[in-house]
Length: 130
Image 1 (cartoon, rainbow, N blue to C red):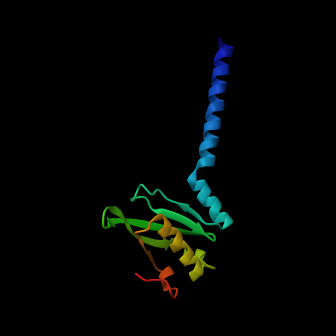
Image 2 (tube, rainbow, N blue to C red):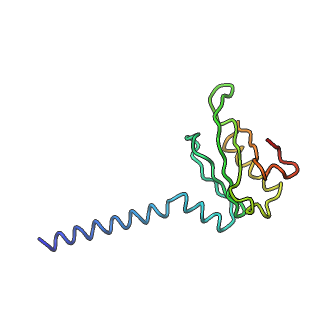
Image 3 (cartoon, one colour):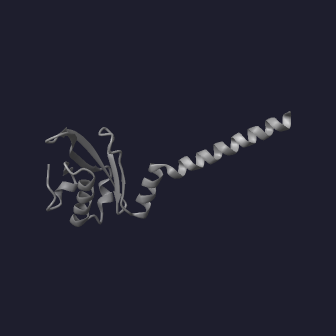
């Protein structure tokens, strides 16, 4: 009886370890941190949840966007996104072309949204201010 109990506990432990590994590798925050280290574009967003902020990385910089819900001609949609960075020093190397690329990506996800860049990003010439 003791051997059967130990086998069942070992099987439960193995299932728990496999489940934990799968959850770790599927974690969007792990992918976000990895994209920051690699300096690639990654968008972390829940389009169905307008209360959840947008997190995106590009060239090693983490941008955060607050979504605001409003009305369009026929529905309630995200109509405004305020983009900012927590660490302004991470903006080193970001150009106007990079910001334009990010605007295009955000417009693809939210076609009715107006993107506003918060200080210090809006001080770059050519980027719309608040």
